[in-house]
Image 1 (cartoon, rainbow, N blue to C red):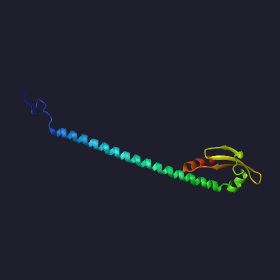
Image 2 (cartoon, one colour; image 1 turned 90 degrees about the vertical axis):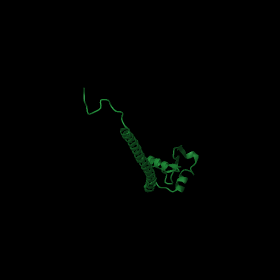
Image 3 (cartoon, rainbow, N blue to C red; image 1 turned 120 degrees about the vertical axis):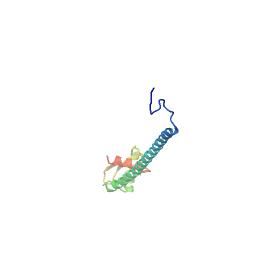
Length: 135
């Protein structure tokens, strides 16, 4: 004969341990959802900040363009350029680019010039033109 303080056969588990397992599963799932929400919120915040920075950078480029054109020694009155190019006549047209048409002109003092008549209507195009001018 044999004697033991523990049962020889394993008893079926009671509800206490399965409740603990369910609690762990639910806590893990809730934690995972919270982590995903926090990561998503951080991602949206970073995305919005980058978008704001892009807009600021674009407006800065437009301001730089105006400053560059104003500070340069290549400032002419529109009437002077119109006269030099023959009222922007097609005969003096040299070519067309993404920002406008280029015309050949002759100033009153005899200097030959190329005049780009600009056409742009948003900050992105102004920024692109600023990059072209500064090359």
